[in-house]
Length: 119
Image (cartoon, rainbow, N blue to C red; front, side, top):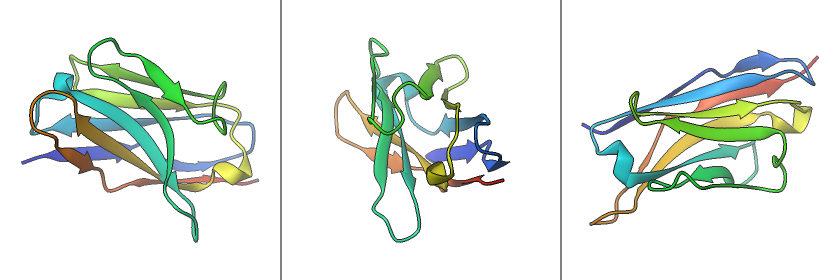
């Protein structure tokens, strides 16, 4: 059974930091590009950061470039999103996404974790 389980969300003050984790199981993690998205109320889901399966190359949305860092641990089948210098506009539900890069094309989503940036 495929599972993506996010954790690490919560309430943080502006300027603070959080690290989100996404634990993957049920598929071959090393064959999947991993990404983080977020969705604020009334807004479309936004791609924030991605890391590919082979070289670990990363890419970021302009809105988070320089503040957020995506990384992955192949031994733990986990992808992380380190979020620094958080702003109130970063408040959203954050989702983990896995997309296969080898063989058949599959895509999976986690259930999301809430991040609230407020004083």
